[in-house]
Length: 551
Image (cartoon, one colour):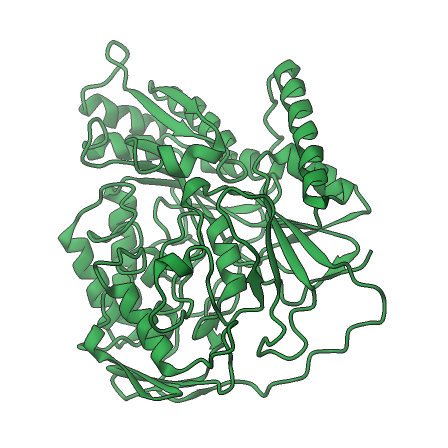
């Protein structure tokens, strides 16, 4: 009955919002803000041949005697549509990912600087040259069905991820793994034997797809009735139901966690509806808020805002580099030069972000090929367009497909159209429903809006740009680029490895099909009667183990 009442409430709000929106005057761009402080980035990766020990397990603090709400109600910002499932192997949007995280655990976790931390593996070590890695599992960890986690489950998970028949989006990043080299040495020891050194293996094998599944698990079970080791278990999971309910795993291996008895997930993509549900108490946690509504939420005593510690989700406009007019590098470069990125940051994100340099690595990262992005060069853009055969009598005309698939995406598209118009480019901005973007628009049209969670360069530069990438959103098929990533993965010297990453990022910036003007900082919102949550720099990560709400 509560779920039905919530959705009656949300439906009324959405209808009201649509009526008001239809009558509202044109939106006035937000006033310019001062730039947010530079994001704190991870220090250069250090080598890890020595064993890394897990910190001593400490008992979770005793929960107060105050009454606790039964279910935590979470409002997500994305809707995966018919692609929604609970198999970690492919996760096309964050609605998948935030639920997958509740069901499973990984060998390792990543901290806010993307440095590996123990999870199912208590410790790990490598040989001197990084060609053999050994992971030691926690003992006594149980799957939801009572079976104990063993090394066979880990071996099966990684072999499945790199099997071409599986078609996992993780295969491009894990290209250095050899299935014959993934070995269960005993019940609690897993060994990765590699053909070449991979000194950053702990980071590279820790992605949103590498959650550990049971040996022999099949998509028929994993999609809708998965069995994991995670803090919550799904209840009668169906693709199109609302809410998606998960209950506490009573045998979870971390003492005292999770603190809530259950979690309910709602996909509420419309910003006004999401905020209204939060302010009224119909939901307790918003995965991300719309930047234009931050001022309203800040004034409410019932809501607390939390900001991710650094550059997070990239805001991308993806061009197919093998399709006219984007097959001409002069056109691609002109569109990049025509942008005033500072205005975009101040207007679209109200300063809650970092200027991007048209590749997956933010300029604030130690792996960035340059730390300053050149300012707008409108005359340079016009010159390149003229060289490509465009001008006042023959303007460049392009279609750009956008929706509010992440907060601020539509505003970015509108501002892009306005800015490139000053260079003589005519943009037909096609704005569709957010619920259909990932299913029916992305990867299906030559110029579309996109966005990517923050990743280590070894993964971030590969997932959409390697020739074998599962999501080739720019059709960037370059063997010379692939060779740079291969060399970086196997380079033991950290300085040389960083230079290889920088060379790959530079290639995408100067020649690639990604226009990446901004990286968001994630601004999440939590009801004031709740505590224990902090947004991560990866939007698909929602650690709900410590969240607790009182009536």
